[in-house]
Length: 260
Ligand code: CO8
Image 1 (cartoon, protein in one colour):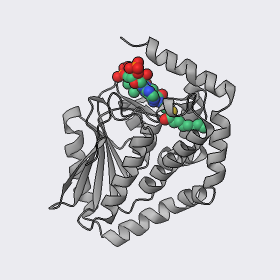
Image 2 (image 1 turned 180 degrees about the vertical axis):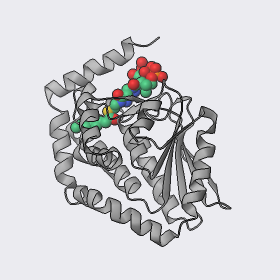
Image 3 (image 1 turned 90 degrees about the vertical axis):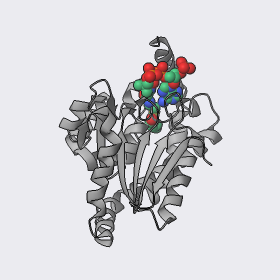
Image 4 (image 1 turned 180 degrees about the horizontal axis):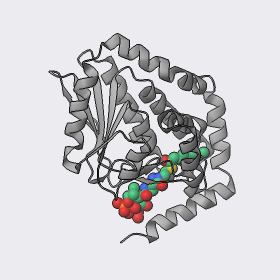
């Protein structure tokens, strides 16, 4: 059985719920990334599964994004392996044949936002203290082009330009306003609402829906598929720069000092 993700598959509805349960903040380290991809691949193969709801079993946090400790003061080899796992997850999730809905029941910065916008639909808790966005520039790093493309495909070019340049973290109401999430509901109804919405998606003719999804997303996916090695290389040479390592170190320090 898996440790960082709990899966509830209801064979009567064909809907699986993936609960991320990696305290304290569901940061996407190599283990969680790998388990996420494996879990999704299994569900993809499972004839009884047609839709997946992705959510968190931790209060207040969906996912803190990529685990910074995987890319801070680690070897280039490790950074490369880590980045391949990030690519793998995104390729599988963004390209999934299943209907995927993010039930965002807490904060969702950076990689957490990427998970969310890689799904077909987003339901978020209506709590203004929860935020979501691609805040990479706040860490002194640059969102890769395929993070950017996924964001453009969700909220459009100009909004993405502002969001990425400023590293904006949108509160749940702001996120709804710009279309970064599709719906806000009370915190205790996020997963239920996602399940209701799933029902509507699963009522659509499946081959037609799948072909439509592929039509919308394939060009974005193919761009990375034809360029994976170079993307790993770019990541490793960027992240291992002394100035970038220094920024990450400062950001980690800030996270710790703001505690309490
Ligand atoms: N990675 C590693 N550790 C983390 C992360 C993270 N992403 N987020 C939090 N932690 C740690 C904290 O440092 C803290 O550690 P400790 O207990 O040792 O002090 C512990 O987790 C708990 O965190 P908090 O006390 O901050 O918990 P809160 O409940 O107060 O806040 C938040 C939760 C809102 C999630 C907050 O922790 C936060 O804002 N975290 C940072 C989120 C962030 O900015 N993530 C960006 C990661 S980078 C990314 O995903 C994309 C990178 C693309 C790379 C491209 C390069 C080319």
